[in-house]
Amino acid sequence: MALEHALLVALREQPASGLELARRFGRSIGFFWSATHQQIYRVLGRMEGDGWVRVETVAQQGRPDKKVYDVTPLGETALADWLAEPTPEAPLRSALAVKLRGASFGDRAAVLESVRAHLADHHTRLDHYRQLMKRDYPRPPDKSAQAGLELDQYLVLRGGILMEETWVAWLTEYLEAHR
Image (spheres, rainbow, N blue to C red):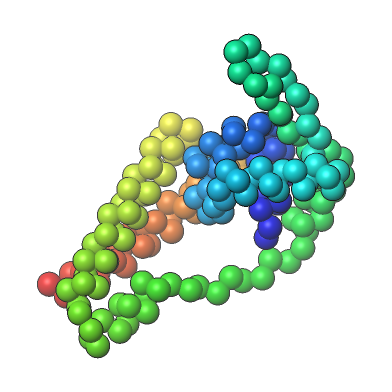
């Protein structure tokens, strides 16, 4: 996947300026596809040049004009084509897992400290996802209704919760085994 596809998804959800996209990335798509502000702006410029997005300049009082990006029909087609392509399985590459496996050959205390730090990060992310779920989906969307954006967003958030629960359980088990 290229950053272009993540931006197309975000812009299909709602047109936005580059700054708004960067902020939204930090709160949603950025949990599973990260990008810096500079990368977002650079790719938006390329997407505009390729005809995937159009830009509307919006005048602002006391601030520079804002560029609001929206997806063009060509961009919609590019996104639809990408969505239809098979998605290869991404191999798991975890330096932490390698350290856990090799802890017997080095400073186990340092590895355990790293595990504690990772566990704290996963607890924080899990708490954040649960807060989003409570705020945005006090009741799950009706799955029997026509599937749409809200159901897709809910299910991705649900997947994030399940992944974080798995990390928390695994790292907790590792720490408990080495007490």
